[in-house]
Amino acid sequence: MTHSEPDTYTGWQREKSGFIGDLSGVGFALMAAASVVALVPVYAHSWSAALVALPLSGVLLLLAYGRVMGLAAEEWVLLAVRHQLAVATKRNLFYSGVFAPADKEGNQPMDLPGVLARLRILTAPDGQGGTLGVVHNPIDNTYTLVARVTFPGLALVDTDRQNARVRQWAAFLRGQCKEDGAITRIQVHQRSLPDDGEALRSWTARHATPDAPAAAVQALDELMVSAGPAATIRETYLSVTLSATRARLAVRGAGGGQVGAAAVLVREFHAMHGSLSSAGLQVVELLDPRRVAATIRTAYDPEAQQMLAVRGAAAEDPAYRGVLPGVDPALAGPAAAEYTWGLYRHDGAWTVTYQVRNFPQSQVYATFLQPLLRPRTNARRSMSLVYEPVGPARARKELSKEKTKRQAARSLRAKTGRSESEDERRESEIARAQDIARASGQGVVRMVALIAVTVTDLEELETACAELQADASDAGLELRRCWGAQDEAFAAAALPLGMGLPPRRMAI
Image (cartoon, rainbow, N blue to C red; front, side, top):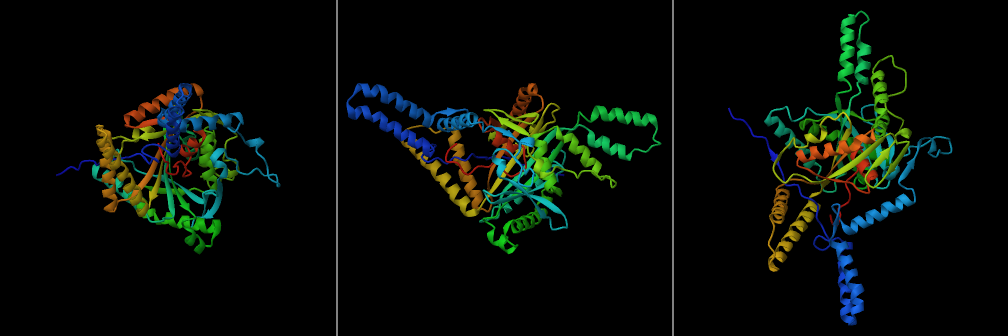
């Protein structure tokens, strides 16, 4: 009898596409300006000019090559200036609720802060007689469908089944790497939050019989009081984003406009069911507009979780005639929000969001991310993995460019007598291995991982952040706080709306 070994994974590589070497276009311009300024005293034959030009040249070079908090110095300066302008003009503050402007009919439309203000939740048929909510981004011309999913997990299954599920998930992602594919983003979003036990108590109240023994009822009540608040629940969502621009012919064939785009999106998602089932993912439900709004609302206002859980549990009773489960889309956003340099305050909670800057360089198992969602009674955690499938032609171009640049850099270092570090050699080998895998039929995806930690007591925030960083260290991850962009990072990390993956940057 043979025992299979669990597969291991490695080879994650950061995007590194500078204008010249590792310099962005702005960095190259700063370096060129520094060179010109440094030559001015030479041509002017003036020592007094050198006293001004040389320090200025040094400052420009520092901005071009320096690093601040993991960012290029020129990027950090631009980010700091943008943040200070936002604070000065009070654009870092958001007020809604009773302060939200009403339309001509007296209704308050969905009012979301920051980058979410452009979004609209549409109602579309799910193809099976029901309705679902589709998040429309009119600026990017994209449509996002959100599904709640469950999965049996990997930690407690045998090695063969674990390996098979991971390979099927890889096959699912590879299947989306089509030339000019309509699906542009896939997001896996999971939340880990304390369970207040309200849903359990509501279910027990509906199923308890009046003639139950008093001792049994008392024991059950004591058990729920002690176990309910100490438990942790997880919610997992899968979001699929369609580009109406890429799928314009299919959208036109389905009726055109928003109706046609929603129909194409639903059709694409139903076509994924087989691949998702093979990967061990079970689609519990496609969220309707009220449930999509509820996921947004509970992220901004954790205290609403209890009310919505009680309402959802009560709605399962056939005799229920109250408010429908979920939230009215017009009330999805926060009543008030404010972001500072390293913190985001929304309603009665505070959130700090991190980006995973480096994945493990060593071989790791498929379960290496599990420490990030360990149960915590003092905080809730949200993690988003956003994937962008890359078409074959673009993947070939990008990987070829990456490999050529690294080879050119290695040749330049050899000519100048500089020794090559093991990190640089390994990155070159990974780039070549990726190109070989692409040529053999593998898919290429861009990916970003973001993690948010939310507390309702500000005094618990630093402890919760320290615990998250310790768990990330156990997983072999390097985190970086999203300084100066906590509001945008929150929208990507804490909400299953398919956001968070920026266009390919020219430098890191």
